[in-house]
Each structure stands twice: as structure tokens, then as C-alpha cells.
Image (cartoon, rainbow, N blue to C red; front, top):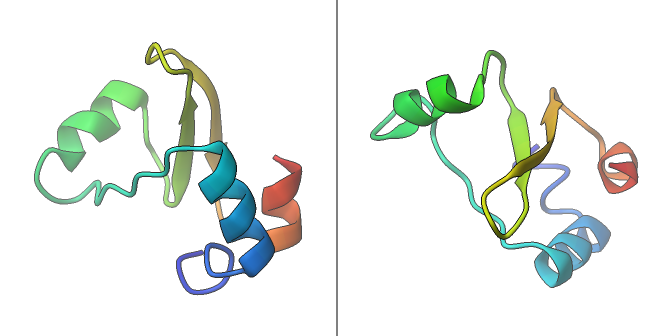
Length: 71
């Protein structure tokens, strides 16, 4: 997704205007602890949070730009 979906101009513009985006390598640093805390079992996993930290959605697996915008 890093090379295809996230570099799509429409996706990038929408997500940069509407979200605070963060990428974490779940295999390094604090990643394994976060993976366990949020139940990450497959890659990629995208987790959407409210500003208070509440998880509102979790999306698992590759998505093409068109599919990603529908989320």
C-alpha cells in the first residue's frame, strides 16, 4: 500500500486533509507491544482512532486506492 495506495494523489489529499496519519513498524521498537494491545494479527492493519484514543475501526489487508477511499 505504501507504493500504490498511499501515493495515489486523491487518497493522499483526502487522508492528509481529514486525518492525522501515523505509520508504525509493528516488528520494531514499541511495535510488538502496540500490536498486542490492538490485536494486530495480519499486515497491513489500519486502525482508526477518535481524538480521545477510542478505536472506531480496524481495516485489515491490502486495499486499492478506490477501495481505500470507500472505508
